[in-house]
Image (spheres, rainbow, N blue to C red):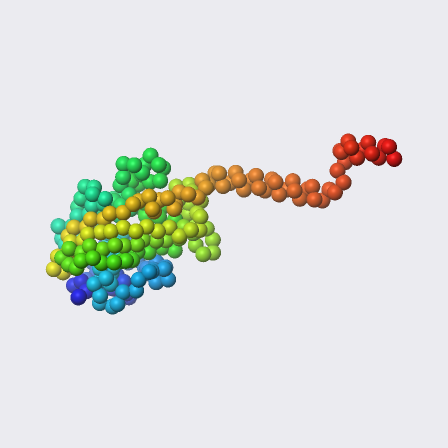
Length: 267
């Protein structure tokens, strides 16, 4: 199965359209193409499948990684090479299908986490987040990256159905990062699974994407850590207890014990 037309990876083995002649006029959201060294390392060390080069599974996996890169880092829909011009839509869990312009305006996290239930839990409120704030929030929670892989492909183009896995670590290996919505990092791996149906054109560009998954699998791992103020209060109490314990250990003969005073008088 051929790779998408106009491939220009710029050195990233999993993503096309990052560099090359086809990107000379691209407007990048942060002024330059992104680098994926950290998340590629996480992906390679934590993936459950290693698909053969050129296989349907690898092609689908790389196509989705390319689409996610464009959505997160290209400022204009006109610069997208992974979607069919004027025909792209995205829906999550049976919700309203958003156009490419709408998806680009709010960002992938706000599309994936747009739910009438989540705001009341304090876990996430898509209406209160912007494209930038949502990405900052998850970038802080997953400083080593948020990796994604295809687990299984059920059908080939033009309608591709597949299962995927998304995962990251709510910390770094050397020190804690975060927090997430006031919840302290736990150091745990956070992951979730889902399925998607992707309709593509003859150039393997996405036309319609439907995603189905349980957002609770993602958010539960991010809000189970103690609130920062609770953690600070606990640390204060532990420090106070340690101080008292140390003071007692260096004072082996209490001075105000009535029993000992009475015993000494009887001697």
